[in-house]
Amino acid sequence: MSVQKVDHNCADCPIHNTGNLKKLGIDMTDHDYVVALAGNPNTGKSTVFNSLTGLRQHTGNWPGKTVTRAEGAFSYNDSKFKIVDLPGTYSLLSTSTDEEVARDFILFGQPDVTVIVVDATRLERNLNLVLQVLEITDRAIVCLNLIDEASRNNIEIDTRTLSKDLGVPVIATAARTNVGMQELISKIEEVSSGKYICKPHRVTGNSRKIDKAINDLSDKIHKEFPNLPNPKWVALRLLEGDQKIIDALKNGDLGDLKSNYEMIQSVREERKETIDVA
Ligand SMILES: Nc1nc2c(ncn2[C@@H]2O[C@H](COP(=O)(O)OP(=O)(O)O)[C@@H](O)[C@H]2O)c(=O)[nH]1
Ligand SMILES: [Mg+2]
Image (tube, rainbow, N blue to C red; front, side):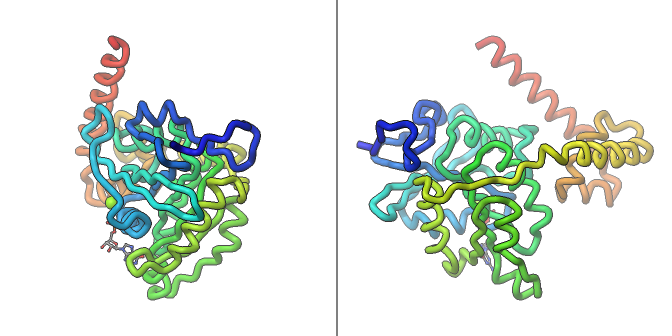
């Protein structure tokens, strides 16, 4: 039996949505808290996952999707945690199935905490996803991974200031060698149980600035590539630091981008139709 507290105002009540989690294929029986693991591809998310769960894990598919999912568990301080590895994504804009899966899990499953694994050697690029996650949930921890690589490259990160600016804990880790993992686990417990209250930074106040950046950039893109169907979409991807799009711009492959875009649109239309029929 999972521990379900009756008082809904209690600080240490789990906040996850058990019903929605069930629909998303996550059974919370025998678990107290659910932890989502988000992050850009190649940030060491799977390494963090393996370090947290050890052998207590299994893989399957997301319900109705061909996207694979790893699920695992760990115990700490008499609490049982279920941890769900979300697809690696650069954003949560839901323009791909992976992004949709990740966004929907945080939005509807309401995990007790979302750990965002970021690459300490590419912090700016990774912060985009962090801010998007913080738009959806209060309960998050930034796992500043590859900290060993960062120091090797003489990159120093002031985690205290970063944590203050973001309004959520920031834990430096080198998951491959288990550095910082105990601290991460203890923070996961503190945030899940409500002992640590996050006050996330929200970017809504900056939206005009962001809009301006998108508009300025998309004007330039339109001038260079007048046949692109959606320069704003490309601008947003570029601002996010999407390497594929950056490469496409550099090597003149933006023609391919058009067909990619059309493919994504047609998949989305198809999905909409399926939902409408259901
Ligand atoms: N140096 C170093 N390498 C790491 C660390 N964490 C993961 N890696 C390596 O980074 C690569 C990508 O890791 P993986 O967990 O597959 O990343 P994912 O794509 O985010 O799931 C692998 O070769 C890992 O061994 C770390 O903290 N330090
Ligand atoms: Mg992985």
